[in-house]
Length: 180
Ligand SMILES: [Zn+2]
Image (cartoon, rainbow, N blue to C red; front, side):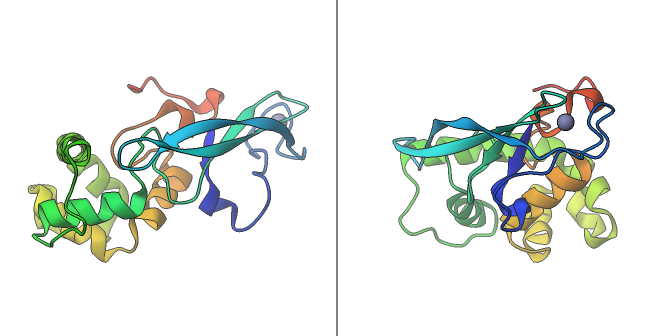
């Protein structure tokens, strides 16, 4: 499973999930090493991803480092800035690189296919117009709070993310067949 570092609220490791039929969430997870992940606009920086394992049920967790998106190199803050530039007409400094431009293009494509799903999950806080138009959706989303908080909320409450549904945000016993 994957969990956002910011959702640990300062704890040094995740808690085992209470819904686990085997361990009932009562075990302290063991540190299980770390691996490097690329990040930054061009993916040329490295950050360590810490991993933990439940000694009873064997479930493993990796912690998405602060400020990062699942499976994307672009940091959340830069993603937010570039999306604001693309969809809300605000300038980005520095202007997007070629790689960033293509990341934003892909993000817009993914997001535009997930508007009604995300509006459904976020409920009444999203205005009706947001359901039809990506610019409108993005502006409404930005009013809900920092993108980092929305990512944590989507992962914690709905086991999904902004740009895709990742199976890795769910425990294996809770997984429905969703595209990776
Ligand atoms: Zn366990």
